[in-house]
Length: 292
Image (cartoon, rainbow, N blue to C red):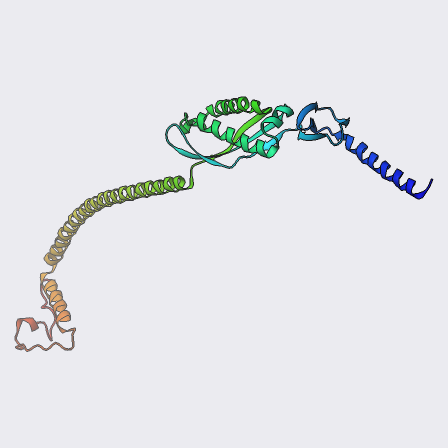
């Protein structure tokens, strides 16, 4: 066998090997596949393993057999009471009929786009009939069941089974939240002003009541002090009278000495009196002896 023959045999062998390799394909446990001949469906393969197709004229389209995640962007929805909320949802779906899926959507990118529109449409239809308090009550589970049922019915036309649809979060729009915050702040400030006004009024009442009680207490104390002072003055006068009655001349002498002490205690005081003045009658002499 000459060299040319060997080369030709090698080329033929390589071509046969390429053709044989292109005729075999593997489907793993997480996949399902369609075998298409010139774009037309020939077979649907869901069993994992090694499979055969006609090389060059048939192609294999693979799809995931597992649950797939759909996370559409958050969107603003108007509720039945005209409240606006921003809803963030997610869904889980599975390709149940790969042929129908291929005919309707071709690939998973188109599937996510179409499912996102279906979820959005169902959300708007169902939640457009609800009031905001319903989303915060026990009705929420029923609402999600209604949305999932509607999405599942519409997605079945694409060969898709929807396993779950959930609202991850439902918030008020930013401008609405700010408006509500401003209203709450104004309301709290108004309540604070009312409470301060009430506190000032109560303080005035307490101070007025305390002032009245103080006035009454002081008046009563003054009354009692005047009573006891008058009683003391009466007792003092009685004692003085008794003392004066016992020795009137000595008492007169004592009173004169008190008058001298008060009048002459200041060195700057100057007095011009006659030597025989009655004020000086005890100068140079004591009280006249007599009686006792």
